[in-house]
Length: 252
Image 1 (cartoon, rainbow, N blue to C red):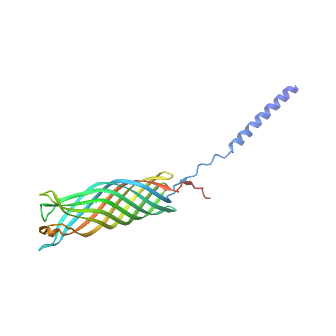
Image 2 (image 1 turned 90 degrees about the vertical axis):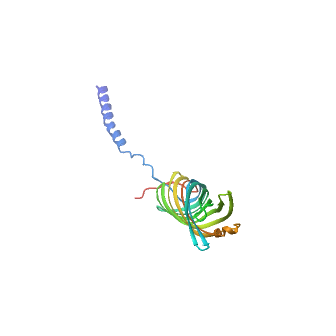
Image 3 (image 1 turned 135 degrees about the vertical axis):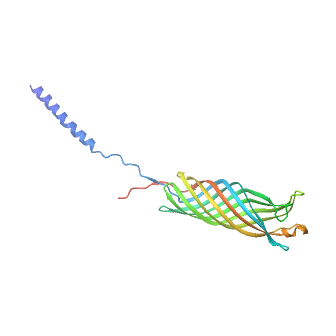
């Protein structure tokens, strides 16, 4: 009888203890969710770019005897671009500000028959482009949209060619300064790496270019006013020094 009572008491204790243990397990807090990671765009960066460009040039013959100024018309040519950029950005909340210098090798050259003298052709070659700009952007974590603007410089060579004898009569080299505006989108795919797409338009204005070495019969070509505009579309990749992406603690 005594053994029966002890067994019954033990069974009751086991039954009563099981709900208590279940209740203890139910009140345990779940593991905390991971904190969101905020991408940081601040820091110095260096990168490479490549893409497509188009140069549009218009020639005017200035001081042409009797005619005054003669409009030779415009021509365009597209080609490849490749180069690099270096800059610095700093971020305030979601706003991103920056400065950047960019240099590109270019293969933008074209020629057209002269309207003033069909035996001649006018050739323009742009082989280098530089941009010095400021940026204002807005970031959504690892995505950045920005606009930019500043100064632009192009390296050019202008040639007058005799198509009958296939010789260059005269040429002139010119470094042109102007302005640039652009827009871009960049995405950070790793803590210090980002990739982007950018469009820029260069307003290079017009300037007179004097050619030397021309024979007397071609003196009308001694002074040409040449207007230039350039469009650029480039893919970019950047590496940022010292930047980091860190979790941000929730505020209560």
